[in-house]
View 1 (cartoon, rainbow, N blue to C red):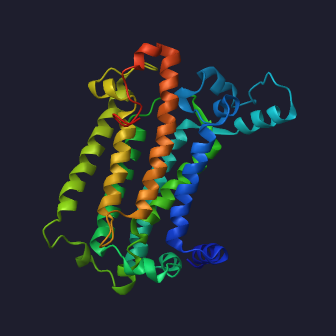
View 2 (cartoon, rainbow, N blue to C red; view 1 turned 180 degrees about the horizontal axis):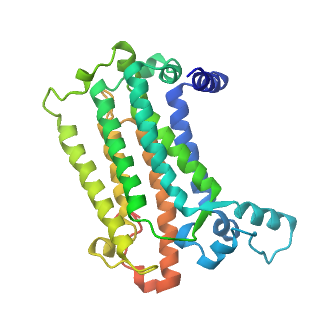
Length: 326
């Protein structure tokens, strides 16, 4: 494990930034980048933002595998953008996000239990101020277990609900997705580094020996309900004929209720992982900001796609993602 330790340690020491601050900055910077790109002129937005069924046509997606899209503007800049947009990967690569999530959960379980080298590389780069306000060990492993459940469920859904498709996505979407899930696997425990360093973790530490707090009593059911709703949404979408407008009751008020459920899942984790004296876990809250912005942009693209394919009236009475807000 010397190589991963050295890579992490070198990266953090060269930037002279606290590990927790660096993690939060990654989520927020990625969020700002996505938001900035989403408001670019349509010539750029249409090249890089939509993916899957939200692209203009399946035929266009298929042709992009072998050649860059043609541009009516023959300027060198336009041709360069076309070539960049043609660097795509199959949309089925979404499955890799959840493979990475599950593997990262297993990896960090081993690191935390053994206080391994990569854990030490992060933990020794955390400021004393952050160490003082620490999650409990029970909180760390509760959030870890819930994230493992989330990753495993989504991995199952990606395989069980998969349909043959020629859809593709820009390779940057794929890289950002992988980076997000790897970063979240760290955010789940990093604000508990103080407790983890001061106490040798044993299996008894993860046993439920006290009555759950009000926060736990509320947030765990919230996580499970949101997970169930998201699963039902994915199952329903899988049952539809290709490119059919969803008519299930849960889709009648919200265009992307499965995105709403995803936001609730990360909100529950941010609340469950709040260090003592804090209302919320700020690292997981930063991850939630990324989820809201990323899925919010995608939900807006979905609305536009539905409007083009099924007409404006088909989505007039529906919220994009968050009822009464967006």
